[in-house]
Image (tube, rainbow, N blue to C red; front, side, top):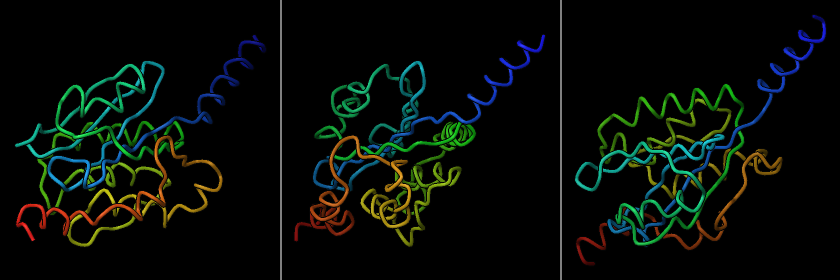
Length: 195
């Protein structure tokens, strides 16, 4: 009996202190068909990746799907949906607690149903909202949130998490991405207006 209780308590402690992985996928302005950039989020569990992406309805709308492996995750928007010019050029991995993982995923499931709007609820706002259910700080947006601003806010507000290895870069590099990436709003206006 004591042994059963000990094993049970050990399992509870392992489960409550284990960490889960959450990924942010980022496409720079020049890599997207719209020129605005894009970001999405994925939750990794034992089955694979639960992938959420928030596009305008005129493009594809919201995505809430399961993908089996990392290659499928990074190529989904380009190869399967055909809505991006390339795979994401930056992928960040975040370690979160089980409790954060559940809260973030629940928030994603609920908020992915909201309509996309440029000024109030675009892809960057969607990801920022999910991360408000964690210990990570994704900053505040004034005006239009963009994927580049999201990455900049993550870099600026989470230095200790980077140093501790709680945030790691899986693909690309944060500093070169920020240095080489044009600002989405002026880049998009120039593309569509032609100046």
